[in-house]
Image (tube, rainbow, N blue to C red; front, side):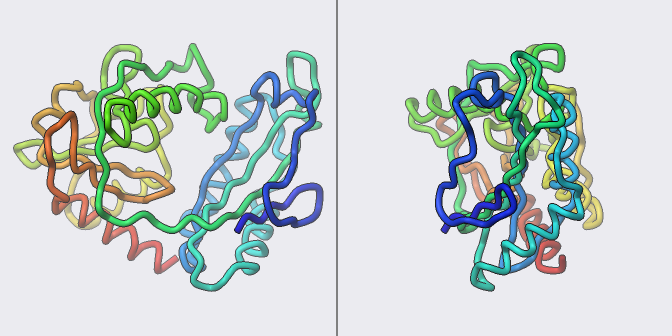
Length: 278
């Protein structure tokens, strides 16, 4: 089921939003965010809504709604689904007018909610991509901009051609940035939990930050630092954090099988408990 709010009304299905001359269609001026409703629980919803406003500003757009207004719409929309639904929440801001520079005051807004069951905690495979994340001087890397995802799909296509589900992408200097679709964590042979330090080439995700905080509360410190790709070859655990699956283990990396380890399991349990309480 798809439910979209646009121009003051809710509609079912894949609602049309754009015109052929809209700035976002031919020049890529759109941003979005992703939140979750899991059986009515919407952990960190306001952080996601705040980020879509920030992302819009970074692209010269103006989100027409406030965080409070968006939250009210989200809760109104979620109430239209069954109480046990697992949903993806996707606010979208896009440019409609302007020749080369979008007219900020004419930015449009749409909110889509759709069924997206939480993936099972069974894991995925990944390989190292040859592609790179751009730095802040090359692209709007501090925004959740739709234009950045063209390179994501390239990395995913190449990984699938090699028989993997996902890809690890490095920054322009060759350090690990993240998975193509989510932030990356790993556990060293010495037991240290590590994640790449945010350096302006990837979004430091909201779920990433929440998991780091939850692990710290549980007595597990996460080290944020530069990571060389070869470190993943000796990792005893690799997992990701992201809005869609929250915490998901990587069970095969470059042909090497990995366990669903205790740190990933603990991170998942902590996050789901946090979600159920919010």
